Length: 292
Ligand code: NAD
Image: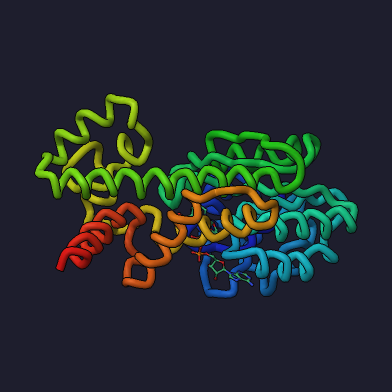
């Protein structure tokens, strides 16, 4: 397929690279001077639309997404599929779908889970919102960039699933960090706490797979000085999106709100660029402050 790709950052560049590797013809654009080997670089966003079978976007937020769609959609040929893989607020995702529909184009919201490692390895999970026809058309592209696709429902459903998953991740990571902090203060070995919880009813991905305590459990960013991985700033972005969506439908998400304020505090205290599991360090310092 001839694929336009807009947004070649930490995630977009390896995703575009994987499309090139399986033989798709990729025309790519980013406001910075990134180049993908084997892909043609377009001069501006609208230029990626020329002759495109599909256009994929991987951008920072919904405002940028919709400004890009307003530039690109009028230049899309008939039958061109629009796939947005960015994580954006639900309203912006719906607006992007409406823009596509007004031009008679099929579209998907398809945010991802799996991070930069998953983007590089082509093992992302796509959470997809949009019609079955659009998904059928886009499947070969999603398969080239990921290993799993879940069709979550109509337009916007992918973004809803993404913010729900990441809100839970923020809550469980904060919870796991809290119990390590409590165990520390009560003199319990971190390894023993891991051995118990990871095989008991408290088991969860944040403990078992991505343990925030260095030297405990499988290898994780904690073992590499908390280099991300998944930066606290990105967790904060997703928690903010979850709270914005919750406010819009008056859903009670008290733990999501607490996780959001904890990550906001951590980011302000200098943690934004550290892995989100470094919340363990932040809680340790908070406790010390409270007692000094
Ligand atoms: P990034 O900041 O590395 O990349 C964004 C890219 O978009 C940059 O290269 C930037 O130059 C480009 N860009 C910005 N405005 C543009 C414009 N007007 N036209 C063209 N290009 C423009 O971010 P990332 O980590 O690649 O994340 C991209 C999206 O994926 C975000 O929505 C993020 O929330 C989501 N996401 C990221 C991760 C992760 O681990 N990094 C995981 C899952 C989802």
